[in-house]
Length: 76
Image: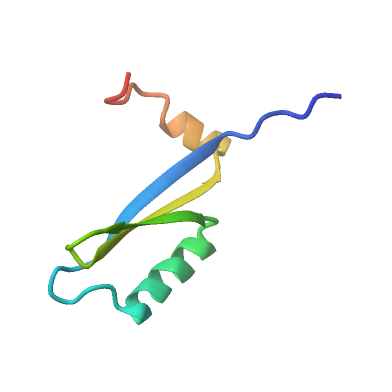
């Protein structure tokens, strides 16, 4: 029997600031909050010379999210 392919939703957030950089406690709070919402970090991307990082996460796409997104998006 063929397994149904999972669909995902993604989230990207930039963390840090030019002068302050990425503070470990703020990053930890963000990751814990995302974890409680079911997000799993899959990658980070350093923004060179900006003291920032992009945090990229995913979680399984739910029927609720699919219904919410049933309106046309800017990518259609």
